[in-house]
Image (cartoon, rainbow, N blue to C red):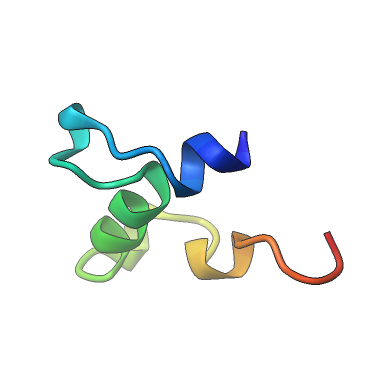
Length: 46
């Protein structure tokens, strides 16, 4: 799942990974999202 969300680039998203696309959409329209997608990134404690 992590490889798909953070490494695989998809044609339907304009060549972005799902994570990159969500971050790109969140920047101009943060009201569309309940949580900040940057806080959902896996880190040391996951």
